[in-house]
Length: 528
Image (cartoon, rainbow, N blue to C red):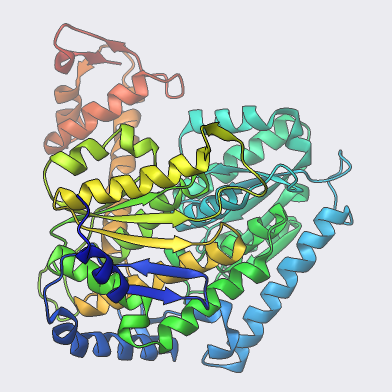
């Protein structure tokens, strides 16, 4: 039976934010009496650090960089007139360029207009644009987006096959701050070759979003690509959705980028000034701290009950996990921090992993995201007087109740509808919650040493591949060898496992001319 005391708790702990069209319920989180009083001193410290960051302090000491994604939606907050002017000029150029594309003033050589966008990026250079594109898409959009967000050859082929003969109408946007990111560079080269095979001039279909003077910037300038937009070193990839990274594709797709920026700006303003109990970003950070013990002891499950928010959990995986997953704190102590994030959408999840959430290991907390408006216009009754949206709402609240009855904690974020404003609000809300939480646990949210370690390890594998293939090509007698024999021959016996994996991959593809003689025990297979 429902507990009437829950209603009193709901009223006491409902954070109402009409200024941004959002309210947040934390009443189903089982924080103890006195929790907020106990946490307020370090919450005030976190707010002070956020203020320092917004005022231009070096927030990423590893790279001696400021962190200024908040300036993107309020250039007046930037620390210098030059930065403010650069942000304002970039937004003006984005709007003008999109207008020229939509009107046909800028057009492809072999078609009347650009009708498709191919976005090439990785990590934050793809996840933010993908999330915005999927959340706000409509059949009447002037351009349809596609993405190269990996270095998977089959993925390239599938996307290009979807575009098909419309490649001549496709504008390609290459996003890379350095211009040297391997996945993005590979996507660029694959796209360039596809245009060449179709008899199309790639520079006449290309736009770069990159740092001034980067490898990509120089290439785009030399080849006279259609346009170059800036990426600044004070904007990290996972917080770049309100920079040119997110705004150029969004503007080309026909979205109201002013509304998106204004939603984010208004959320920033509210969460900058409001006292803790009226500050949804501060409350989110505190609920994360309560749920995980400030040590990542529980997972964050994101359950949006709206198809348009399907990609939100993927977007948040990078924002939260890359920001908070750190081995060391700011004092150099080993802390192994982080919060795991997963999710899909309701009610799909109720037919998947909600069974475990309700009855399995209690190692998580849920964030429900509720969207009040079902659709634009009237819905039919699918059963008695119930609409399909009524069922969606019923399943959300039923799951919330069932989890609570099972002793599982949850937060519910409610917005009126999905539009550019509300997407801007959600982006800013979680960016600021991540910033607050990072200060609460004393880590640097704005670097990614683990990502860099992975890149360096991949480089070693590719160097090893070159050694192995050169060795095989040098053998004239055609004798086949096992991976162990090849590892000994190239002077890397400790790398035999990596060499075996390299050889298996090379033999499965026609590119390098490697063949394999398989045996019952695949480890003993021989390669030539």
